[in-house]
Picture 1 (cartoon, rainbow, N blue to C red):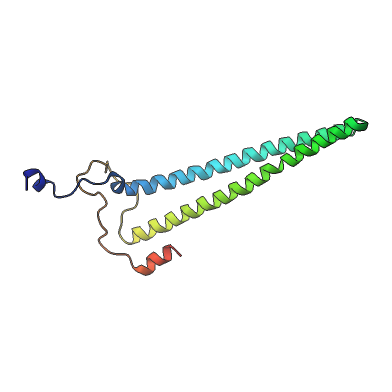
Picture 2 (picture 1 turned 90 degrees about the vertical axis):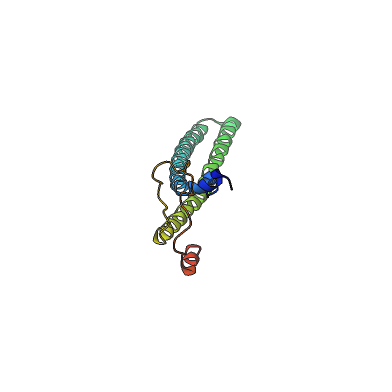
Length: 155
């Protein structure tokens, strides 16, 4: 063995593995931001849909003042606009499903983080710069979690 091999008994750490505590924190923050963005987007879609509905209802009202085929044509266009506004409802339903899925993932991460903390595994944001350490920053768990705790996490 060379002198270098003796002085560095550990393999160079995987930067992804050594930053696992940071990734958990960052993933939770990213999920929170994604959920916030969905709330804002849903609000903006609802506002836009409401403006379109009011405009279409106004056009429908105006169509009653126009006689004959022109009034009928205007009324038909107003109906088409109202029909198109249902897209906002469909989008809202899909966005709600995505929000629920992200919330479930966030809750699962919180449960896993709690179980890991109870098992003595550090899960918070790491102290200092863990990317350049010569050894694996998180290391193996000193105690093994109970299988029942693992099963409970995955329900």
